[in-house]
Length: 314
Image 1 (tube, rainbow, N blue to C red):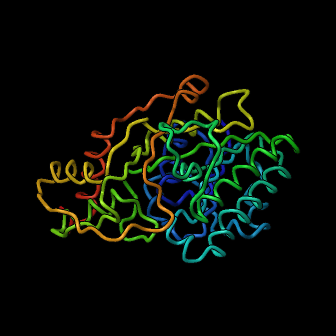
Image 2 (cartoon, rainbow, N blue to C red):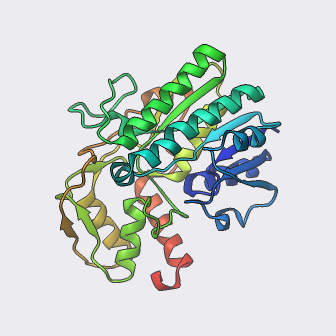
């Protein structure tokens, strides 16, 4: 049994990581400011130590790191539009906060830190699928911030010997993704709109594509990165390697829910990439990663969760 610290553990992905870690019998501590996370996301779990604190506070990071073997660093302000509107606030969380976590992990002698990177670092590139060896071209402050923190991780491996691994996420979705949050993903927003008889909004023409990845696949990839020997300093894509347009997504969700609502199309948002698809061969070869849950099955599970969790979405 190992001791894990999950920063942002009361959030969407973080709470799923906590759930699987407890299922495997590990000790789990959560550091979360509850700015975007929710205590309710952890209410069903026993044995999770919760520490309310902000990663922008170095002292809080040091205190949370005591006795920890592995850090799963999820805490962030995960929003392109928010970073465009207020790059200073998102920089504080996504770069300054990440540096605090790295310093505290180094000082505590943590065995390994797995960082939640982002596919947004790739930007708009003509080459698909996107592989880890491509030159990044971030289009938003958020994308740049995630890339800088990723580089900090690699630096801490090379300079201080702290083992770090970055997992680049691609449009993760699943239960507990809060549709009322300004940081919410498109699937949770669509699910709420369709189930309440409202037309969802699509920014742009809807032909932009994403590699939608069910959260269980990400959890598996992250925990493989935490356990696989000899991967310090590496970066891995974790996704499905499949492209789905937003128009296709809407048709699929209409079919599952039993609605026929069309989108309201709005002006494309600054900083959004046009197409995203992961090359996952490196994760397959090195980590033994394979997507556990298909896009279609993940969509059914997610919609089912929203319908059961919200009486107005039933």
